[in-house]
Length: 101
Image 1: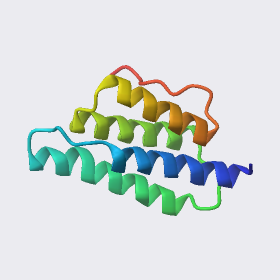
Image 2: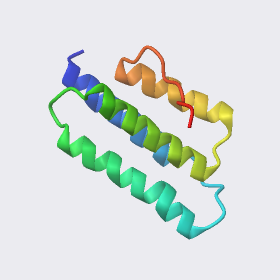
Image 3: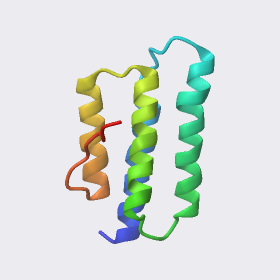
Image 4: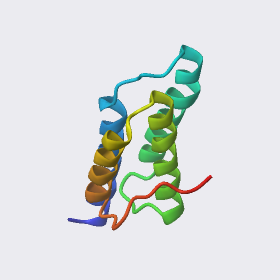
């Protein structure tokens, strides 16, 4: 698989995780800030990066946005692990871990 294909697969897996997770968050304002805005950033970066390999910083940024979305939606840890594994596999990543804040 080419690096550009891996980038497309990575974004596909991230966007699938966003779309396929249930929202158990409390309110619409938090949803706008914690889901809509980060998802828009993911899509914007996907367009910007079309046909090229992402930098490590960009990968980490996308994974951070995904974690923000999963936090806002209050996705259970088991489901998060499932999505992290799919994203790692699609993106050719060795390990996907959540950074400490």
